[in-house]
Length: 477
Image 1 (cartoon, rainbow, N blue to C red):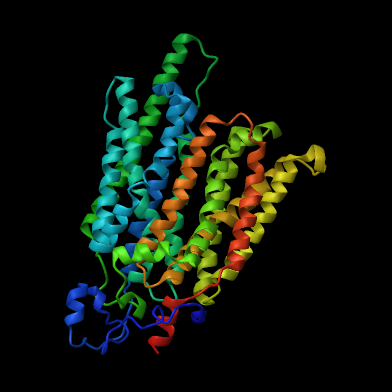
Image 2 (image 1 turned 135 degrees about the horizontal axis):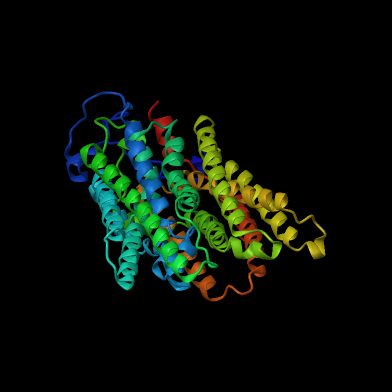
């Protein structure tokens, strides 16, 4: 199971004497657990309500991604309706990465107070954020500030919806369902961002710059009404999810589903120190953060990159949509495969990043058709971009599971929090750089195959271990 790569300390069973499968002391406080003479016998089990918990969390992640990407697909309409500048549009997108700055506070809250409190706080921030955007004011300057404030609050919800998926899957799901649950919970945020490419343009009409002055004013009012309809709809959905979460979202099941779920974990301080001093973890964290950060920045300017190839903004949006949807579907399928064939996470990542390296190289060489003489058609651009998105996006849940296995017994929320913090900082800096230096983007195409190849080499050199799985399979027997 790869346990030969882990230290003797990491392989020690974390259940105290007399504690069997499903009888972990960590379901109480650490101090109380140490004082328990014995545990009540009984096997670990799963509950049907786990799917309801997963559904509520996944819906929250979906809407968070949808709200974050509200303005990008309708930026031209938003400019006319509210007078947004290019800096405003860029900042509305940047509130997502900026929201990860207090990521360590949410990691601490998840570790100390559990899943229910963290999810309730997250959904409440989203209610406040979407509510701010709906306040009816006539002053456009004040309206823009309210919209920015709402997007900032929604960005603060990002650390939970991105980091808590492995924690939820470990808390509620058995060992042969964990990767699947992680994939569903983590991929729905990406799917929400992709659906914004459909919802916005379908509801909000594009501005008509050739209309007379009176007709243009009428068109501006109509566009503003349609945008506000989208904002009210998103606010209503968030309120429903928050009400459902408040009514029923238990912090944990009555009995843990596995030995790993029942075991004690390291403290917050020891966890952070362990992560920052673990060379193998830092290696695989860079393999995740660099290519996905580059891909996020590249996707944000995809319409500008494809403009010289005479690809319209609408086609660029559809390319982004299908690459994310394909990545979600393939990611869940790969995670289900990983649940059936355990201990194969590294191999899956090698296959995915081999495909990402080839497809990104294909796209880059196609854009240089004057030198390479490769056919530059809409079909080849669609195929290479969508394949690249599928390979990279589908790797996210596999990475999350491998992170947790590598540094166990560090809590899942802290592990994924550090990784997503690094990725979003990298993406935010890249997007900020592209905001000011976007006149020449051909060099950016070479960053894609370079980052994918670097990640592939890091994964190839990475020595995998499955300490959490070892505990479930061996200790439970």
